[in-house]
Length: 391
Image (cartoon, rainbow, N blue to C red; front, side, top):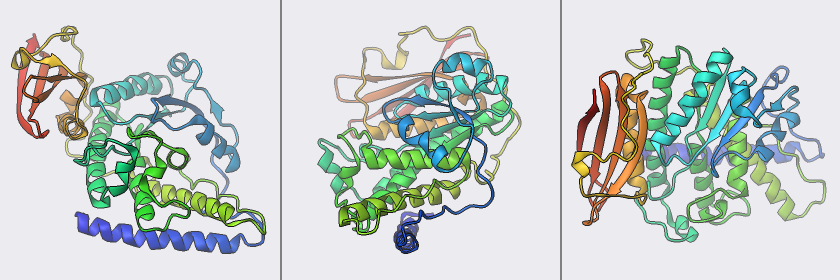
């Protein structure tokens, strides 16, 4: 689907979502809570652990949703999660991250899934394809207000690139595990839909895109945190989030707007998650070469601090543009499965001319390799080289 087609889909979605909220408000006029779509009794609760950084789903917002949906038996087992994982006492891990480092994310997910599935054959891992910073969309953000001028098509294109890298990694790890245990929560796409509503003036009480963020990084504000919780809930339990409770009769406009926002956020979450195969509600088309890939084992990993010959004279750096971050995530995602599971480390470098580079350590059965990606001042990839570090 090209960007013009996606713009049409987003435009159609705006009308659908707004109509849904208007209908929900009409149904709730008598003060009775509306019912979420779905049939049958609620699913059983799971033993869930929540992991991640400051872009992770907030436990205080995710966990109460099960009770509101009538789900019984959910347990928060985040405390002592490592020990619980190894003894099979965890059913689900929800992992949130900002998508900045493929090596960190992929390594973390792999280290959770392997022992989790070994101890509990029904173990599932959910990790988010997050919202993107506009550096990924080719923009420089200096202040939170800069998000107000973001073009939705550019945002969707950047989100597509990051999500695709997550999908390729999930395919590879599921192949390695021999079953579908790794799922992706399409939070970034839900955020695009939310921001499209704001730009169109159809998200009550919110006039600017930047209002969903707390800062320029951008960390989530309350609205984005709520959307994250609803997306994770929908993916984990495979049902719509519980309906928003309407305001009492005679409530002021601010209360009505707050209810309409909540209804829209839950609708966005369900429509996004339920239509996205990697979230688990639909089957994923198997990629070519679906034979199980055995995990890579090598005792000759690259020692910490080794600098590849290609980057002799360069200095370690943490100042990578989001464009570069997305590009090397895509590069890792495109590696053959046998190499992808061997990704062990990602480090960044810079020289005195303004160029940047990324060195990716890939452990293989024939030793450890360094994949070096070099970028110019405009963050365009110039070349790729590979060098063996040990046999």
